[in-house]
Length: 181
Image (cartoon, rainbow, N blue to C red; front, side, top):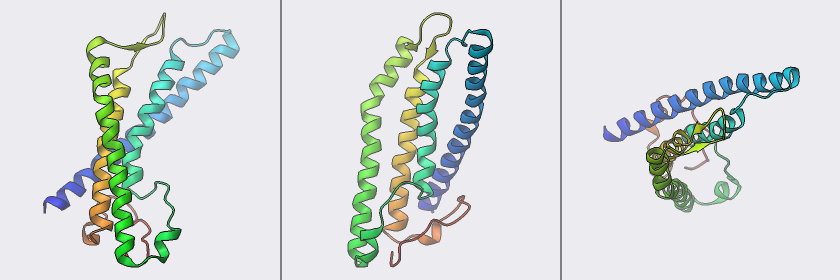
């Protein structure tokens, strides 16, 4: 039951962050178009758009990475896995999932101090009329990395240990499976 709850919460959070990132990206297009229009028509860009876009892209990527992992949309080469026996295939999958979870755990470990500093010191990007705070991007990286690491663990539980009966809870379609896994 705890595993089912973990997968359910992971799915809900991943999907929510993916939708939030998509809405954010859609809204960002209007800001960019307004800046281009203002620059071309009035000869004056909108101040702060560059900083908003720089921070937003980072936030959008990290908010969507958990869903990409959970829906098996991350780039993966299956050529070798297809020809391996089931036990060796599961070992390689476990190693890959462990490396993915470790990668995002290292991002969290390496970024915690910067996120806390950005929050407490009031770090900003940009000069002049509009200064954009950097702490939202730092915390988006931390949250997105945590969701990604958890989703690698969930993927390992499902793919390596064969817990297909608990998947998928919120994903619309079942991800493609490797034969024999």
